[in-house]
Image (cartoon, rainbow, N blue to C red; front, top):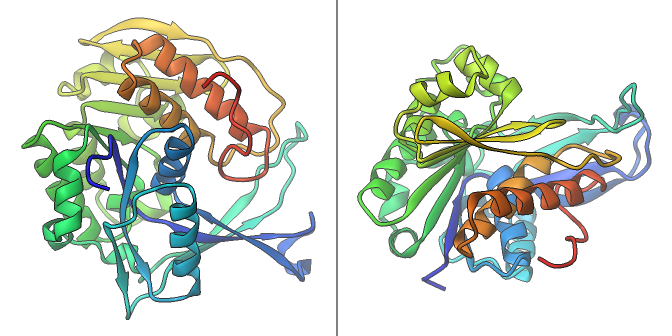
Amino acid sequence: MPGSKVVCVGEAMAVLTPTEDVPLAEAATFTRTVGGAELNVALTLARLGVPTAWLSRLGDDGFGEHVLAVARAHGVDTAGVEVDAQRPTGLYVKAPAVAADGSRRSRMHYYRSGSAAAALTPGFLRHGAVAERLRDAEVVHVSGITPGLSDGAAAFCAALAATVAAGPARLCVDLNHRPLLWAGRSDAPLRDLLDAADDVLLGADEARVVFGTDDPARLAALLPRARRILLKDEERGVVVVEGGAVTHHVAVQPVEVVEPVGAGDAFAAGYLAGTVRGLDVVPAVELGHRCAAAALVVREDRPVDLPAGL
């Protein structure tokens, strides 16, 4: 359905989680779900009633079929998803763990090397359904995971940023820093993608790792093109930086955390839903907080029950 307000671009994976809370070595049965930052955002946006497309590549396998079925069942436009007969759909496994505070801090084991999504290249942008959806989008959303998948995916992200810059859409980038993806490689493609963004979402902890600072003024100087920077601190809320200066601090309401995985994607979806609905930045961020809270209180990577009144 060309005309989607938000187009999410990036990897999706099948997810396996032990059915029982036991160490991975003792798990005999697993629950299958789907994950991946940009797909998580797309699925939540669609549930919020925002016309959303997702662009990616999947393997010609049962996991890929399941990912497509879930996306379509949520109302996400998947016409821009390419199926690769040679490469598999990526996979990750959650290893249950309980943190000192009683919350789950699962360890992730990723099996994505050589996946169909890792084979994204600039040529993907020339496909008819892909080009059409990017041309009609109001917002294009991608995370810093995507350029880390491979050198080809990094080149793809550079071409994607140039394509979006040439059109009317704005580019939203969630840093989503994954150190293992950049081990032994220059993270210049990640920095270039952030530098091209109109909206930058990043956590204070990952800002310190990537930029050496979580000071809003210094981040604004390092990202001069950004129309808006949302600096997230999971306990204190979000600092909004616009025009190089802090304009708002939007507090977060504490919740009893069950599993933190996916909360950042839910926040991004809520925020983007607010902006495409024409909300000012504070209520848009508040909507992001509410969606993140709904993700924090469940074990799944996405909210199960979105809060009322959305």
